Length: 313
Image (cartoon, rainbow, N blue to C red; front, top):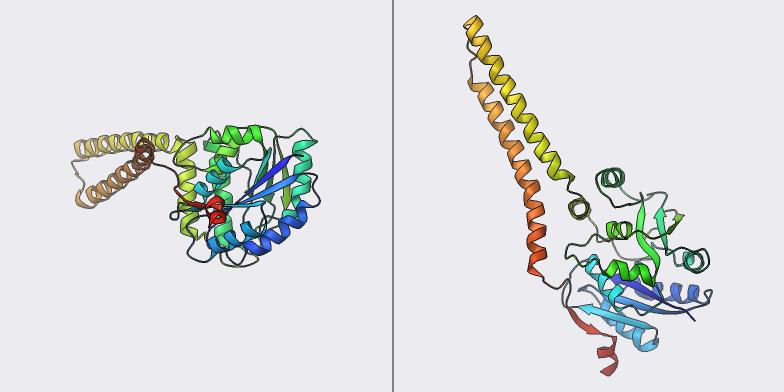
């Protein structure tokens, strides 16, 4: 029988994990395959690790990885993918916003319909703040226009992938990871499953507006160099405009003998040019910072404990 590895990144999910485990094991009975569940504790501050230990001792199909500190969801997904033994690998959130009931259909898509990946997307953002939803839609439109990554609007990390697609994703060894972009960049034939937004079963979201904004900027920087071209183009345009303005005032003073007052105009021009320069330096700095982190070759995550350690105690 095929083995399906279910990777579950967790950060402070002690309340959600037992309910997630119950729902997934019930759904697994409808699939003609074996499963393993890999909880990745991303340096949680609650009892997430204790719950993972308890579930692992209760059910040998449950494995877990615990980080030495919080490294982020991207590191959690990578650790789970690297640890997965399955012929097929799924990535899911522990809060049940990713409906386990879709797993049988997703498994059929990759085993019977010739797809390498069965992915999910939300058709609605019911329950989310209006401003947050607006900026999310704008982000998907923007990144699809300026990058080579194919990212579907509303796409979730929830997907079931064949082993060959997982291996391709693991070949992408960059330190600054943006999985939505990586999944789209590696290609492979993907079938999309749509569903309406589902509220969390317990706990609170870990994604504030600022964190989502930072994550979106990282995604743009990781998969597009367009901001650099925009910065260069804007600088060129400002130079042309400044030159034309200088010519205009020189001709005006020569013909009419009426030199401009100068001070307000000079201040406005200086502030404008200074702002343009700071924007350009900031964009360049983001790319340099990512390059700097890549050249350090630091580990993306550090493991403190796994289920093997827990079972030996």
